[in-house]
Image 1: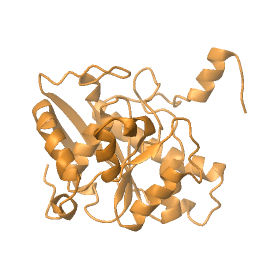
Image 2: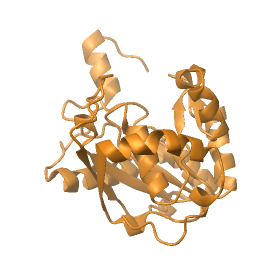
Image 3: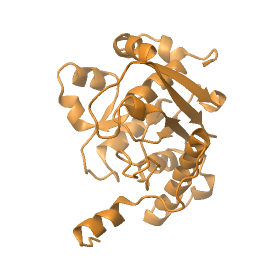
Image 4: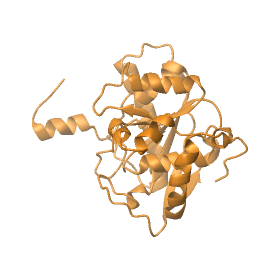
Length: 251
């Protein structure tokens, strides 16, 4: 990867240096990134990075990738992680944003915190799926509206990103790491989506869902390219499968 000349965020002293000192040596030994279309990753300015999500190790890999490309990554992360001694302090000091499991995104403190990052011209990483995909074959499932809400309210692009290979390091739902032998993680960066067709419209559920579908379609297409496969025509919808499993319908 060639991150170019713009590396001001990573060169500026910050708590990220401590995180990089801890994480980078391990990841560099265990992971080889093979990135396609690296030039599409914004070197400056605010944007929402929207990756697919199928392993607990994903945030570490995407954080390292962002750092290698010259940007300091800030995530919407599970609030429970912030209670861990030492790590919680580092996460807070580096601007990571705690999100309560099952919490509503609309008007929430996490979204407001993300918008403050945007005001400072920083990037924010939002997993549109909200959790690990439940699709049996690890394809992206139906997305949630947090990523597009931030982008539309602040007039910034969403950059779709797909990656493949993390499941060899940490399978979905597993806590077991497999760091050796060294694994290759394929990454493809998509064209920034400005979502211009949705600007000026009321940000109601219909608009947000339509915009989210555009983002999820872009991520899925990138993943198809990486895997050399075609995704299912119908995206996995957790709500529908929950209804089938419980025999209940909740509006």
